[in-house]
Image (cartoon, rainbow, N blue to C red):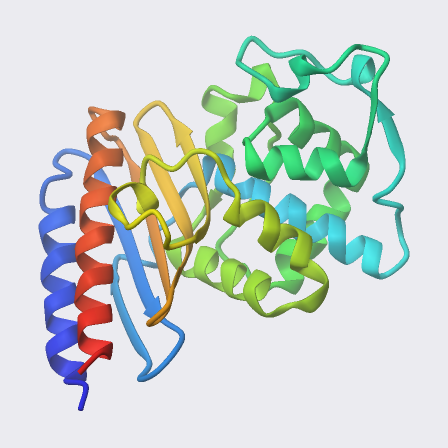
Length: 267
């Protein structure tokens, strides 16, 4: 028989150890199991913090839900040379300027590689009104997404996109259970930046997730698709003095939490 109180206490102790090293920054954490006995453990999960590239998941949801309603065509083709440039690495640089890709494929690039020019085009296709309507329809009451991913918006303006761990959990749960969001699930399980939640997990354990990074901000949100059961993990941070160290600490605490949960599920 699973000792739910014992599991809760063990996970809470791991979270406490993770957040106690954040001085002077702040850290918000939310853990939830989807299979077997329900378990939710949180630390400051209602704290509003910068979302960074976690907001790209909203773009994916908004795109495919608009397509489901027949409002736009994700198969429409876009010329690579018409997309905005960037000073950062971009998968789009692998294409000739005259090559074309679909809007659907650009969404894939935005979620598989976190490509900013691809995300900017999806944002332009959707428009701010449709993005805001998606945030409202999903019940993301403490999420704001007024800025994009252009070079100009990756500094202080980029911090205008804010959310909470509670809202990110609501978003990834919606992605998990909605049939027409299968492409988004496929993109996120193939996400290439795996230095946080998945970094210490066994290689054969898929993680459907998305990170977000700005100076001092190290975020990750997703679902560990463990054979013993699905586990949602959300980490939001701000004011981190060393982004690389925080990413490593997210990987370490994620591994310990997953091991605690899966060991308890095996009892």
